[in-house]
Each structure stands twice: as structure tokens, then as C-alpha cells.
Image (cartoon, rainbow, N blue to C red; front, side, top):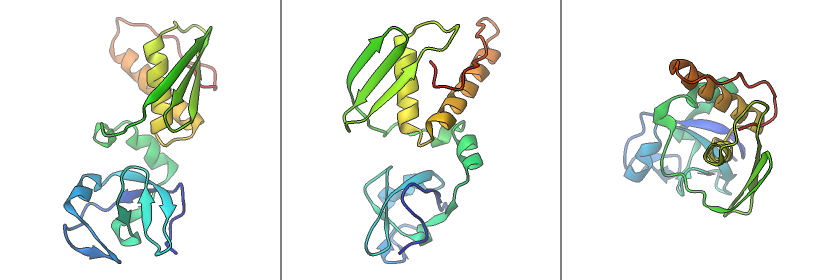
Length: 173
């Protein structure tokens, strides 16, 4: 078995060479866009290779740099080059009730976000918040913290808009 387990966050090596074998698997050109990226181990195969959430190829220990710490994940969430547009997660239904929005996904899961105190109800923001929580790979608490910091940072840069500091530790819009 490999040195990583399901759910581990690992960084794909940046120096991988097309058509070279790493362990029992060859690194192919369509895998190149993952170099330097933090990925999530989805499964460990019988031969010790890995499947990752972000694509369909088999990966090996030799293709990864290290297990990523929580601090690295937090920092990488703010780096634009880690945001990929090929994430697909289709919304099948949205239920809004007073201060709560529930987004149902095509994989059968759901994400619940609640409007925080002193926040204006905004359906688009609720859906974006749910999307980030679903696709960030972070825990609900960590996703909330990253989103809160990002929003506060944006509003601090634009002096025309005043946003009250988010206080509640629960997931908020």
C-alpha cells in the first residue's frame, strides 16, 4: 500500500516529465495541468496507486511531493492559480426558507448555509458560499474562515462598501 490515505491532501510534483514512469504508472501530458497543485486522495487502489478527486488518472507516491498541512491549504485558497474552472458539481435543487438556503447537488449531497446576523439576504451569495464549501476540500469550519477572510479583505479594499465583521462561528452568508 502507498504512504497516503483517503482524504489526504498532497501536492503534485512540479518537475514531472511527460511519458516517464513513476512507479508503475506513466505520467502523461494531460496530467501536466495538475503539477504544483494540491489534490485530494479519493481512493487507494490495490496496486498502491491513487485516484484523486480532481481527475480520472492513476497517480503514484513518486508523483507527489508531500502531505499538505492545514496551513498550506489555508494559504493556497487565496492563490488564484489553484482555482480551476473544471470543477463540475451540478445543482439539482435549491430550497430557501427565511434565513437558510439548502443547495442539493447531483451527487446526492446537500450544503446548508445560514444568513448571519446583520447580513443582507442575497440568493447569489448563498449559492456561491455553498459552492465554495462543497468544492474547496476544506472542512466546514475552515471553509467558513477562508470565505469570511476573503470577503472581509475584498470589502476592506473597496472603501465604498461597509460590511460588518462576521462574528458567528457557524456557516454564514
